[in-house]
Image (tube, rainbow, N blue to C red):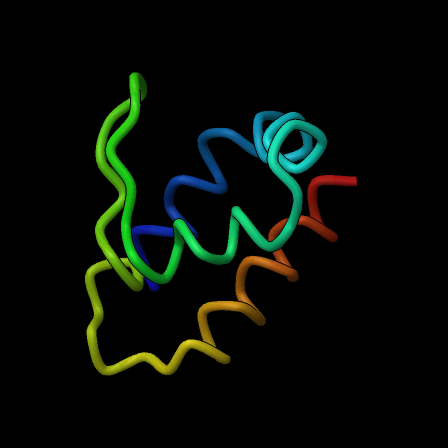
Length: 68
């Protein structure tokens, strides 16, 4: 989860934009399964496979709320 939170600190404004473009379900799915995009790689579950899907979802929801 640390990688997800680190990314959030670097790109808080971008999270709001991604939310508007992709929706919360897509953001949660990418956080759970991982994603490679133009800005780099986000490992599945923030690089911590011990996290549950619900923990990842709660973190993404928190990050979105913090970006508003």
